[in-house]
Structure formats: C-alpha cells, structure tokens
Image 1 (tube, rainbow, N blue to C red):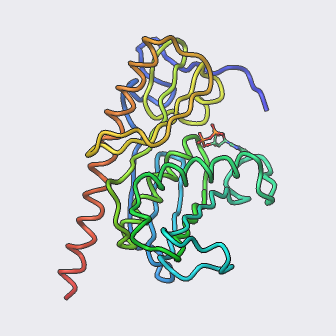
Image 2 (spheres, helix red, strand yellow; image 1 turned 90 degrees about the vertical axis):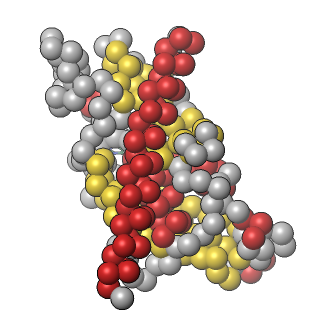
Length: 243
Ligand code: ADP
C-alpha cells in the first residue's frame, strides 16, 4: 500500500523517529522465556517483536531425514497473522520460505553440527509484531535461543539492517525507511570471529557506499552482540542467585 512519501531525513539531519543516522532503535532482550523449549529468547527492536524457540539436539522425525555425520538443522521463520497492519495470509509465503532458508544457512555456519550426528536441531522464529528488520531480529533471537539451549557454537550472530534513505546511510532501518528508502542491506555478523554469515541487498549502492554500509552494519552488530552477551551472562547470574 503506497502512501505519500514521508520526510525520512529531517532538516536537522535526524531521522523520522528522531534517531541519528548511526543510532539503533531501543532494544530489549531476554532468554529463557519459554519453559517447554530447550532454549528460547525474546528480542525487541523498536516496534519489531520476535520470539525464538529451539528444540534439540533430539531424535529426528521423520527418521529417514537423519544425517549420519551431523545434526539436521531446521528453521522456520513465521509471521504471526496479527503481526502486521494488513492482513497476512497464514499460509507460508515465498518470503517466509526464503527467510527460513537464509537464517538457517547463517546459523549452520556457526553451530558445531558434526557433534550431534543423527539428531535434529529445530529453530522456530515467530514474528509477533513487524516494523522492519524482522529477519535480522529473528537471527539475533535464534542465536540467543541456541545459546540458551546450550548448543555449542563458534560465535553468536547479531543481525541488523542498514539502509540508504534520501542519500544517507542509516543503521537499523524500520518499516517506513525500508518502504521509502533507496536501499536496504540486512546483515548477520559474528564479531568474535569477524565473519559475515548473512548479507542481502535490496536496491542499489555504489561500491564506496557498500563498503561504508558494511562498516556501519558491523559497528551496529557489535553493539547488539555486547547486549546479547550481557543478556546471557545475566541469566547465569539469576540462576546463581536463585540457588
Ligand atoms: P525484514 O522484516 O527482514 O525487513 P522485508 O524487507 O521483507 O523483511 O520487510 C520489511 C517490513 O515490511 C517487515 O518488517 C514488515 O514490517 C513489513 N512486511 C513484510 N511482509 C509483510 C506482509 N506480508 N504484510 C505486511 N507487512 C509486511
């Protein structure tokens, strides 16, 4: 649904919601929010709210899908029917199938899948409310849920999308900026091992802009990563204080 283009970069250089170009939205994170899953996390980036649940390593169903030398990693990204303003079909869309795949591939490069042959690790990402950046918030939540489940990983992935709006490179774009901006580049970054595990680009950037956008995204992801570590650390402090 196209409306008239809103002012994205104001005269004072700030964005439509008052953020500086390199500023993240307000972030909330929590792990261990679901007691029936092996690991879980809730992550909020502004108006984007995502829940992730992890099961496994566990027996594979159906059994013939089991792999002899490593764990089978499955990932479902799903937008709840109440997550958007417009009606969203409850059937899996092409977009949801694509996002499930890119998030799974990003995490597969980090999980030590060969430690758990003949098992499955199942990741469920449920978007409760969508306001841009649901795939990156989903990746962040899934990384936290995997860590909460105690699944060994080479590093955690932090996700964030950078965009070009009215010619300005900005960090952590929301839905309005995504809809009316010139380019949108979601990334997943593992800071400790300095690896990009997800990178997509929608729109056009010059090579120089691409390099700057990547730096901005890495900087943002590193801030998010620090919060992820703190969130996991706090969980253990909570467990210790309850003992
Ligand atoms: P991401 O959520 O990773 O940024 P997109 O760029 O595809 O992925 O979507 C941008 C935003 O557009 C979403 O976060 C969401 O707010 C909105 N959106 C996406 N799909 C739908 C849909 N089927 N119905 C309504 N809004 C949607």
